[in-house]
Length: 425
Image 1 (cartoon, helix red, strand yellow):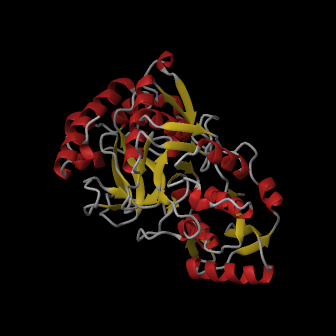
Image 2 (cartoon, helix red, strand yellow):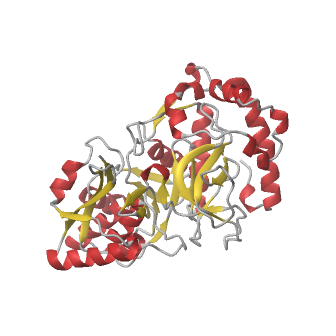
Image 3 (cartoon, helix red, strand yellow):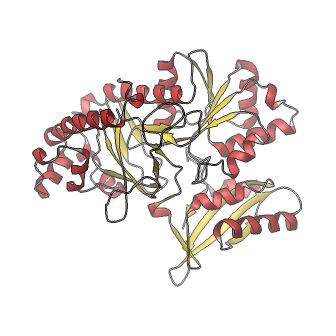
């Protein structure tokens, strides 16, 4: 794999345009879905010569991928060696078929991601996420650690007690985890007289939840962790469909693009390419994927990108935290609310132990928002703190329902491989 990220933006663009031509030719020959899309829209590949020409190709969305799932397959089924699925967080799970080359690409992607986050062969990584159930991320992280030459402690999504037992036994210096679970690790450590800052953990590579605000300052969840535990946090952005991750470097100014692996566009609702700093939908064209490559695929995630120089010397664009998802936009009392803003407000209140956001439709078809919360401390005081945080962040106040931790767990799907923080009814 080329070390493109330290080359000039012009060289990066030239490389991507060369790879784009090959990708289009591959799709024209091997992809039933894109072959039909080209025919239906009278697209001739000789007219697509640069990144700017991508606007002439219609975008593809999650609904298309789900409806025509195996029409995206570009290889005979006997070349498929692994099947992954999306989590189903924003709809029915979609199957992703991977070849041997795709797994090698996945390993390369996560190897580069760990390098970006300061990873070294001497590191010992404790993996605190699902490694089975067709979950691509768990496998990808393991493959990346293996390629890095580091050691992996594959604990999976076990309890805080089990995680600490493994930390004390195997002495990892890096954890890979969901940020809200790290809060539970801290709570357990403090309740059981475990010295966090003498645990040997130096860094955490975090998945699934944002750690930064739109201005790239640490958000409430990040502060809730680092105010109690002296570790360095690295955020990531990824999706199963694009088989690619974007990861922060030590400067913490956005998730670095890997230009060898994916072309990125940020589009508005009309499909126009937005400028740096403008929020729109992340749209990707995968490079080097053999089994199920994607062309102008709308992820549903709302981000912006930054293109000013980064202190690490990489010249790639960087993605912001996800501020929302297209199909998770909530209209509550006339105000647009994205779930991450709710999560951030709740995370700013130390007494909030856990929560589930429930979105329902009332008899008029309007969104209703109920926050089911497990808390510690005096209920009246905590309730006022939560109301203040929500009004400051959202400018509206959802319904609050205080429940036990056991009740919250009963609300969540038993087989979910990701922490469930929002439920749409």
